[in-house]
Length: 458
Image (cartoon, rainbow, N blue to C red; front, side, top):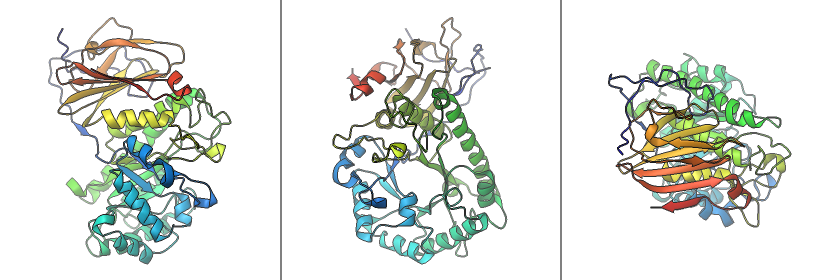
């Protein structure tokens, strides 16, 4: 049976992560124009936290975890956060970190401290300009508007001073700012569009002050629900991304920034909460839970849809305090990967090339895809705790009597139908003829038994 998907116009639908139902699909003979959304080669990232003795706390990354980190597929790792902003480690330690990041095939995103000086920032750029230590991606300070309460004028002046000094040393580096604790409309509009405060233009030497814009997002505090994880938190981050993209598009237009000079964006810290609930179980809704891994997929999917340069969750390993048990790798001595780790790994290994937006008429069933020259890939999530879903990828974009209606922006081949159980994630990889080549399944029961996803290669 041939399963070449027809292009369609969707009259009523839902985005990945929303829960408004599709009423029907109407087909048209009109040609549908779709735009490929390449996934950035630096899209999947992480944050280098918690390192040993940072803030006087125990950390294990350098001694024990780089192998595990590599296997999850990050291509950029941020050396940043409040701890390093307050107390920058010695140069020898920074060199070790940069070498370790490069050794696993990733690039550093190096934060200079806003509490030191532009001269010190320039010294760091110079030191890390050597071939073996070369750092291309930089950021300036951490959460100046959320945690430190700097004024917008002070933030603007600080960025301009630092960026000018840093690019005198090496005009080829790329600088991302401001790493605010959330998207703040007044801050980002000023930094991107204000005639006086904007940092999106050129400095006195003709260099762009900045090359990218980033923000952090922790959509929940200590009190929230499972529905908040699945729906409200996703909608909140979508809204933040859309607002930021609107500012960036206007800024690119204002300063005539096109091509490689166009501003890009990154989500350089995120997790489901900034303060875990008391229940840290896999069945719960805190950072170590199974559902948080699926939440990470939602955030990665949103960020691919809106063409992020990088997404760096918080963080690699942090397990000494329950409320900030944020790592995607668990506590010593076993350092067991959590659901967040495996969901990121499934995506980094299989969702490659161009992102393909897909939708479902069921709020708890979510689907996304990707395509490259060799394969078509699909990721399916069932976030229901009780309902299974029967799905048929042959029915994508077709009028059907099936209970589950699926749509795809792009024409893909995928010959497969199946069932996905509650609390499950599935990845399906097909060759370009639509023949299944790999199937991955990860369930809450596997997570509870500390098992990795099951992989079948055909």
